[in-house]
Picture 1 (cartoon, rainbow, N blue to C red):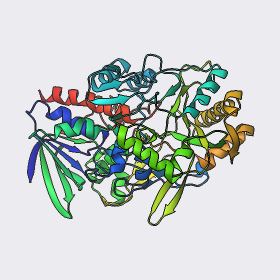
Picture 2: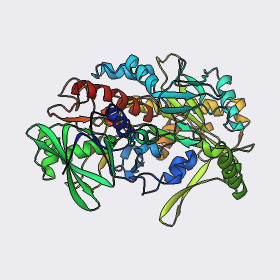
Picture 3: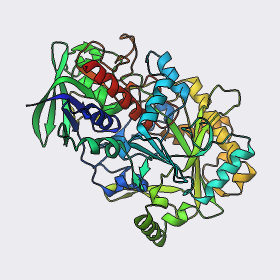
Picture 4: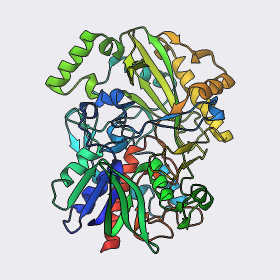
Length: 537
């Protein structure tokens, strides 16, 4: 039985940041436990390799939701990272801080001390921005790359269409002006993915006081009275127990952090009893408050070459691979999501209610043996899509059995509020206005059914129910707040009702941020490390 000051459960976007910051002084020993592998796959380092890891069970938990009546009875596919680096190792790389109002809303919701001024200062401390002209600002370990000089020329039609509608544009959605048409900045450095494992954990592992154990599934937390003191782990088929001298920190993500609490006897008492688990703490909100972004894409054949012309033929793949090998540039060094931005579907709204994506590529997914692969189409095409930024529907994630290997019950409860339905229609109409502009119309050869251009509001909503899917941003299942009656952890991320245990990952978000959630998850962990070290002083 090993002993460490801090035991971090999960080497994902949050856990890697914590490992680096908690170990930096050399005073504290840190154990990081990761159920997945070390992430040696070349598809993780390659930015466009996202398509190869999307269905790969070696690095992906490949969860499914329960069927949802509001989504035409469909189950949702939820890829989550099962690898060092977590979901940040297999995501589409878009770096989005979120809007200032998102974090002020956190504070209003009870997350005292997590308003925009704090979030912004934390972002500034951890980021290093590389601009397209070669200049750099910021000195943090996390590289954020401006790739506006590398995007495909077909993207110009999207910017022309936004301008035609009088919509704003911005050079950086993470800058002072964050609303409008933009080239998405991504987490890369030297043409390789810059996830939290590379930026934070790799330097930390050079220290003698940091230990990483992979293939280590944490099955339960052990308690002595009201204090978390140990974790029970299955490693290479054998049980192992590790003890914590100071704290255990759950950074297993919005799916697995609440599951581990419930398996350990912390959660809704009736649920735990139904699975034969003795409740140590009745905490009904563990697993609740689930929020996620739902999005949809509209596909069009194009009148001019797009990335399909590069990535579909073998000769194009070969040229792109050679360019990447020689220069670390080109389409393989980029995200599939090249352009988009935050937009207001109506000018009188207080802040943007839609995030748009414009991709100069279309693709199909198809089975290939035991795997599913993503293939660019053999003709020029492009995608425009949207996600409402701040959905109000709330769901749950719960255990399905008293078994760490049993899949979770994921019930998103999607589109369960009138405001969410209204936002779907508003987002569809915004994309419709864009696609019907003269500027973007020049790029349209024909629609790949269904055709957004002629849809009415009810048709937009019906199509969304039939085809929408998660944008892979689940948050909120261990929400933070000052009130133990309505939240799971305090603003210092300590579990209400227990000592020696914190949760530090996207599960503690009180509200979902307006954009992609990987950046705010790392920001949260960076700030959380300060709180943890303050409390240990």
